[in-house]
Image 1: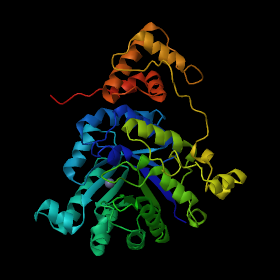
Image 2: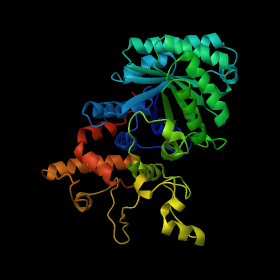
Image 3: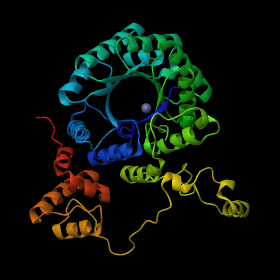
Image 4: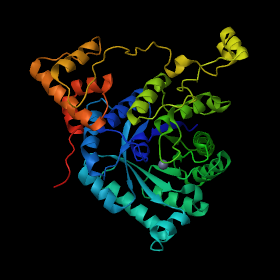
Length: 416
Ligand SMILES: [Zn+2]
């Protein structure tokens, strides 16, 4: 039986969202949290974008060191030979790529303005796949942008060409959130059956169906005999109305009626990391988690009305589908209400020592001497310049533990 995997695209679709962004250290923390959670792959950024190069290379180094293992780090580029060449020249160690090109007539005509035909699109994609293979790419995914508005026969032909030239996966992008669970199920089943290639679902929330469409698309792929790789973002942050939310989609796949019994995960997901990753992304993006967000919203386990409160107190199963412990909630959290010393771009050694000392315990990284403390503090200052808000404990510990990697992440040098 084919399986369900998760590919999180927060570090690509999430960060390209209007008004929102993440520092390179925040992107790195997200890769670390996704890895801890058991997510198969992180679409970790843009290998053709120069200011990403140091971050991408530093994260590939973390993978070599075993810190970012077993998660797969994959870059996103356009399906052109030029982009492939640029990606491998800026990030020579990149091994996993997704190549994206528009496939609908709307976009072929509306973006290329009559300069490209459907055949040209297939050729551009095939040339890009061949170039990526020639450069040593170990895995290649081909993305059909606007797949949901693409003629189905052409989509099958396009996916078949991708497979024949060595792509391992085909991404069905419902770029505008146009599908419903019924249409995406049918389309993806046809692709799975006729092309015989593992499918990625990439769903957006313009009509409020991103999670539902992801689950229906997953069912279509598996019923068609293929593994499925569901694209998600943390807290659903993504272009316009956003993407399929990571936590909600995992909950839907593992808890919804009839689904979990029949369709299984390819690798175990640690759902107890949900609370931590959702909270971190909310802090990093500066976007609050909705009060009614599945699993991680403030009201997800709150009850006040008489009948509900009485029922849940007698037996939580009366009004809760799953327990708060399962999504990593329930631990007491300390909120500072008095004096607070925070990290900042103008922090000094005394305040910094105070902050690091306060998190003493098994997680603390002791400094060897004053020089080392000064060096770490300097990196923390730079990290604060980028983040423009106090760093969280895990970020401070990361810098203290991997100063050389942090230094690379924080090196932003425009080309001469
Ligand atoms: Zn997208």
